[in-house]
Length: 197
Image 1: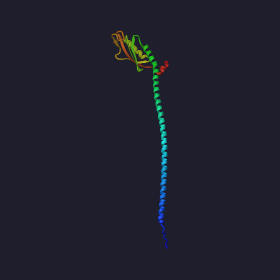
Image 2: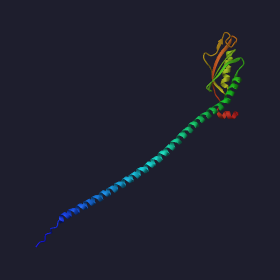
Image 3: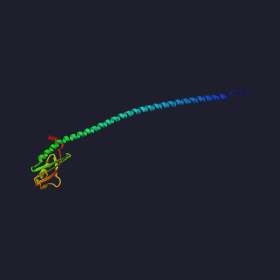
């Protein structure tokens, strides 16, 4: 004869499965919460670490920007000082040139010529105006100027040598010849100037 189990075993098995399912569900939820909390904490720590690195880099960049500004300021000051030194050197080197130029003007001036105006333009050219009692004296003066050490390329300007028929504003007598000469200032090269000194 067969035995029949009349106890509600199916119901008990269903309840046990439900309890196991709920327990597994709660454990999975707890593990998921723990894993997500760990990932969130790790990401927050990484973000904070990166923010600290960014703040450090920003501080270093600001410090470098200040240093660059000070370097640019020093470069400006250096350029200004260099420009001043160049002006001083140019003035220092042109100082003896003017002295020699005036000496050449005096030594090349022949008798019978009177200078009324001498002007220097940009330390490169000189304009000489004057009067002579003969045209030959002006030609001689031109030759002497072209042979001078600090003056060269002397040429008559304008219409050349003009005869003056009456007294002018300066009070020169009639029969004088007015001339205007333009010449270049040609200082000797440095090695020649050193030989003179």
